[in-house]
Length: 260
Image (spheres, rainbow, N blue to C red):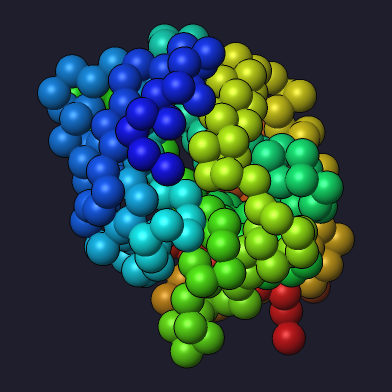
């Protein structure tokens, strides 16, 4: 993967701009800086290697050279889509999930921001927002996907079991440019339906642990425990507790796991 191969592959998509790096600290940091410097909508920052990649809750994201996809999209939301920006993580997750389906896999979305294959984390999403006063100026959508086996961190560094596309498809993995193209193509198509029930239904349909007992934790504390019913219209999680009371879990510094 290099800048020329990416430009050639992505030429059919209406992206706003491309910045490619052989190595970078964090694609999200670069995208946030570019967003404040008049980056166009759907501009992308991509790197072959990240040395300071990060996920939610300030966790490190492992991106060794030549083995993964690490990129960040800059979005300039239209007025009509601004009320639905809380669905952006679902939009990104669906886009990655569809690219996995193209490889014959059966992905699930672990709320709010992980993609699972066979119950193991394969990709993660980090959403960060640039504000202008009280209004959202731009949204940066960072995505990291484990492509080759050596993109999976050593087990002692894992918060949740992890895998890669190579491990799951058990055959030659497509070029990273091809996988990126499929993700971006899906992202553009779903983005046009961000305000629809169609997107929410598709997200909920592949929601991991639906109908199962789960626990939601924030740091070392358990925030909620209950049966996972599905999603609210804004993408929040809906649980049913032991007393048959409905619980809504908003986005935040929380993580979800099956109940022990």
